[in-house]
Length: 324
Image (cartoon, rainbow, N blue to C red; front, side, top):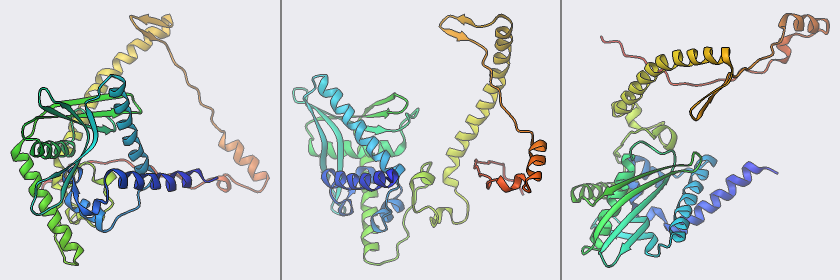
């Protein structure tokens, strides 16, 4: 039984079924999540779609699971004033711009509608810009449809593996941001329609942190054609700052660990408030290659006859450019 193929094939089937039932044909409109992404990526996904790999399909299922968990929790808590997968058409004379909202809670007495958008991933210290763009698009569209209601928004991030929760609230509609997002949607739709008609279009690009892991159209992206990506300067600077802090922390951590280990080595396991300190030992066995080579030579063989091709590991190397 090829379990990998079974998972891949049927998760793909389930993903297509879920998309058709909840979102329809995404080639016929632009959604709120599209507006927070790179226009070039969004348009190419519609014209030259790639079949999702197993990792992506599992992420999709994880997202559906997170939404189901939230729905069950609110139902168990006695909430009956929420709707799921609320679809709203934003006003636009150019683009079919439709938002789908995970949860909308309504207080009819207070005339308040609150959006809750659920994300399933490692909990970030602050919401990603694409999340906020999606939420502002949702709030703007909801405010258009319900002008007599106060609109609020929040983001809920669930890490199902680590059991961590992030809740980011206090969002309200912003007309300026919503207008910008609608303009972006209209520009994307015009470019998309032009490409469908066979016209050559210079698509707008928005390189970001998720390019490498989530974009199937990166290899021929013009933003990386010259092997320069100034748009990622903020990400690289953040990483370098964190690495510097990590180095400083390690310089403080190592002596503390060394001193505490010296205490434990002398007195044995100790308890410090709610922490237990003990010495852990790990031994490794090694092979005497000289003796093994001698034995194999008597058999007319050598160690190289049993060696497998070496594995390759990758890591990120960052160096300062030389100033001319």
